Amino acid sequence: MPSNPTISATRLLHFDAAHRVMEHESKCKNLHGHRYVVEATFDASKLDKLGRVIDFGVITTLLGGWIDAHWDHNTILFDADKALGHVIEEQTGQSVFYLPYNPTAENIAHYLMTQVCPDIFKDYEAVCRNIIVHETPNCYATISR
Image 1 (cartoon, one colour):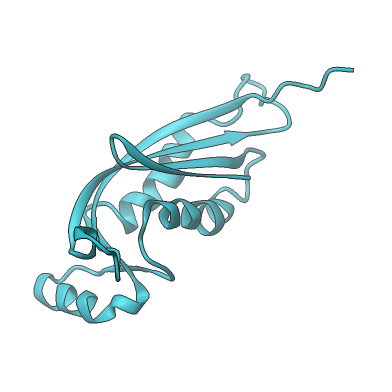
Image 2: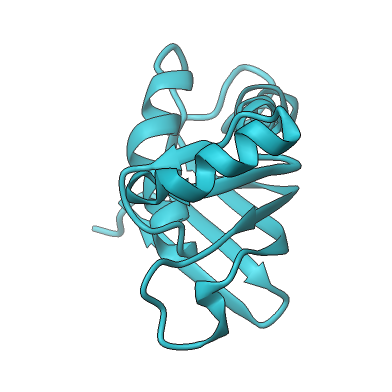
């Protein structure tokens, strides 16, 4: 007997942020910025009454809003990099976002999948199943459930 096909909905979200990768063997150890693109894919066991997995606007409001509030035009650092973070905070007045690990594309995707999405989408039937974080147009990391 054939299984039911999975229908998913994906929303692209963009943000600009600075980061550095501590102990990187090349120039990524320096503070620099990217135009990140996040592809967030959701699926649900059934479509809603309008025929959607989830309203794209809900993804934009919740996940896009979280990204805008915490990461857009900000600096994302490893929490072991607080010496740099404190300089940035003191000199610019902005608050730095600290991850519990180096802010690589892989770790940013992991953080969104495991920490952010389960919390902000807890009241929805749709579940985030895939996050892709494009650090550059030709470099990206993927995490899936």
